[in-house]
Length: 194
Image (cartoon, rainbow, N blue to C red; front, side, top):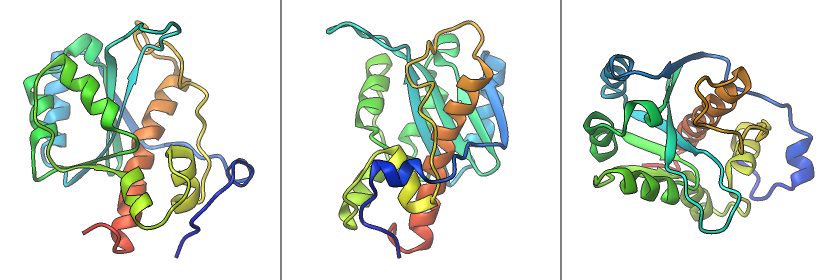
């Protein structure tokens, strides 16, 4: 079983954890081709996106990066450099691959602003959690409830279009995608995802 609710204080008292596995930063078409070979064979991908923050109403920045986690590896695909290619769109349109994320409606819409595709087999973990009675949603709450960990959101508003990502940006971005994969697997294990 799991708790239906978690407070901010309870989350803040959990052990801080981050992804510590292999991270591949994808900056070029060649690196993207290699990443896509692995991603096309995945059954489940945990994913998230990052954009350069906006500070004024009406301002918009396109998605700069897609994070995709598979068991043992996270790809940080810098689409501000590689483009949102047909190969990436094919993954989002592939019915056989689960794409699991948290609060991903806007992520999908933002990607569709870059190029047209029809998302298939996309699972918003907030929706799954709500359906089974969880009161608190969002990545920090779900990581606390299902994984018993706290994750940092410290790099959330950093510049994702920088020429070189900092180590803390890489860790933050990889952790967000990895947590989505871990939560999906935990929910599937417990029979909440069929």
